[in-house]
Image 1: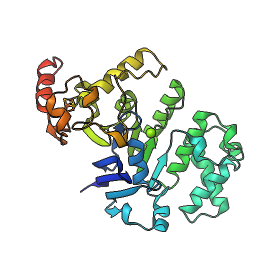
Image 2: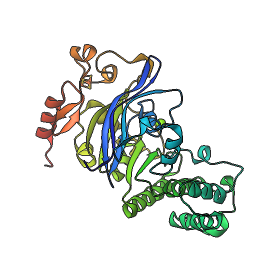
Image 3: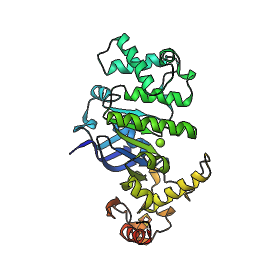
Image 4: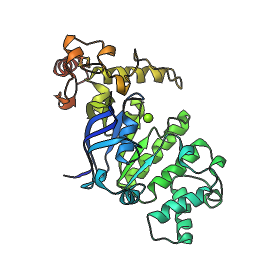
Length: 327
Ligand code: SF4
Ligand code: MG
């Protein structure tokens, strides 16, 4: 297999509560995969579990990175992998940067952890990296502290740090959510160019299907700790089969009409991990729910050439095909 990351039946539990309930997917070299859903769907926790940063959680399943199961590594071994072969960019770079150390110092530490460069070589590399992510005057900027950078520039610093060891897999968790629309677009362009140049596989976590569709090759939609649909980005955008994907897409369209006003337009609330509805966990919010949906949990099965977890996936795929005049 050419999968660089292969996640198999990943489960994350806190005692009896299981917010991630058997997630499986793989990522090829250079692939951009979106993981999309509302907050609380288990997306961020899936990422933290892959990085082995989900504190006090019980993990099961397999996280195969280039064939090696990260869940079996000793903490010391995992420290080498983290920020090395797998790196992560977070929504809020301020929480990941140390406010009392210069940006240059923090970059140098990251570089030296994953290379044999001495302090001087690491400093040169830090300047190169900042230059590579479009931070102007990198020579001067390395001497500055995180608070001296704008939100967008801080996120560029985080991306430079994440890319410092040329990771095989880069996980980006809502990398642009805290930024204004113009800066968002610039950061996505930067990521696009970087991963293109380096052949990095990316998992982009976002609640925004529009952002995912613009960047990703394929998208998987998560709800209630499970993947409910996976498809090529274009196919999902054109014809979402799962009712939740359809609702998310509707919400994304409404959002684009009211720029910058994040009003959730899907009726009802996402479920809490400890209080999942019976049967299909989307049933209380689903306009297509039938009796069977309240009792039986649908498996992720192929419908319209893609995996979908809905009892009526085949029928819905059929309807979509018939109504799609653009084909
Ligand atoms: Fe809706 Fe039923 Fe499909 Fe769940 S299984 S998404 S409730 S139609
Ligand atoms: Mg999150």
